[in-house]
Image (cartoon, rainbow, N blue to C red; front, top):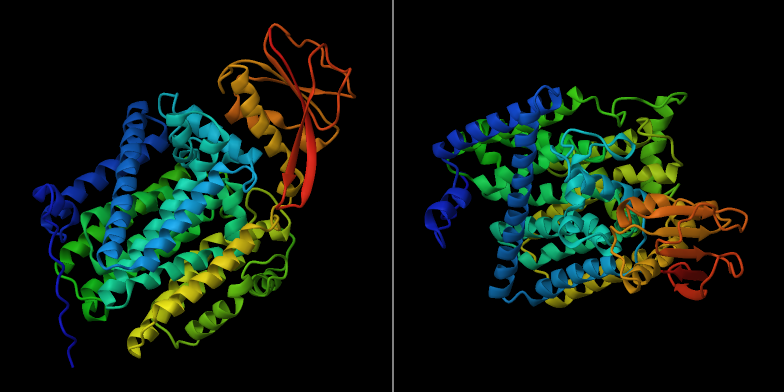
Length: 584
């Protein structure tokens, strides 16, 4: 029996009709022509930029890329706004309150030093991006922190570029891609549910389930580059679901831009890139050969296929261009001195059983059930692909060398990208079950599920670092840096003024202030006081700020020492810093 033809969504005609219809209407031959021109231009410019033979091409490519990023962000926020508008019109109060609540909480963490970490790696990454804005070509094809692509750091430096250097803008820079990922994933899932005739409020379950994984909360709080690949993954999940429901120019543009960024992001994003290309290729083939096997019947399939193929080629060219620049993240080098068969088995087992660190946690049993069901062909083809990809990422995490060899618990963060994919796969399988059996989830049941997920997420946010343990030893530094911002404000110093900074400490973990200052105070002159002696050569005609993790009375030329106490509830740790300011 033939399936009923789905009613085609009308083109958007509200507002500026022509532009709106072109951007959000169904794909036609005029879109094919425009994308041929656009993808050809940016692909050629990208190759020329990485070849290093044309500064002009690099300058143009960097500006087109940055403008494209701004357009992409605007589109993603509009898509989320439309989802919220639908919630409001349909009086979906639970989902409205839930999605608003998580956004407020994630933003609050950015502004709370007690709730978050201040990473010396993050400050170097943000500094690289911020400094690049003042170069001719934005260091568009260059490398930065530990040899990773610099382009990703341009994005995280945008808040500091517009609002100045501070701990808050540092955190917001890393948080925004993650928050936009949450919003886009929600809007994509919500649109999918509406198209399936399922209550759109269920989408918040998937969003809150993300925080049931302890690695997500831990690395969100760290605010450094490890959170970027999972952010891009969530964005692409939302966009791909929307593509399946309703292909349009806005969605294809965003997928192509984010897909291209995956090649210039922290290495785990390449795993997301591989899955994206696989699913886009499968979607394109199905559009032509078996359109009735798609979740929804689509019009203008031929034009849509042409554009998808062009997007795939464009994304691949962006990746191949990075090979011209010689990638420094050792993405193809395997670890030496290991038994590969043993690593394959142990990698999968350790992730699923939380042996080295809690990766699955409360979600472990559900994940195992999903993987077994998918691998035994009890679910759909895309569930099988997702499961094989997840296991492949687990293996690659331990098999590939990467920048350096960390402890096994630290290496596990490379697999963060599998979490939103697993959540989306399990959630869609659940929705298929609901639809098949014509089930309805009452609001009180939805509220209970969300309440449980909130408790689990709140528990995870309150935990100490279990993966990159270094953060556990540098907690006092964030309180010193927070006080330093207040002290420099009182002295009338901006974050880009020149002043002396002296630190008294015997703790080697506190002697890398220069790493923090590359972003926070790039013109500060940093001195580490040795053996309690005031450093020689300090120009006291400049404002001088002195800190110590012990009382340094009598060790400085002059001034009044102030004691600063802090209470780190997350670590159940109380401590003191001592501060002295000398200002002529």
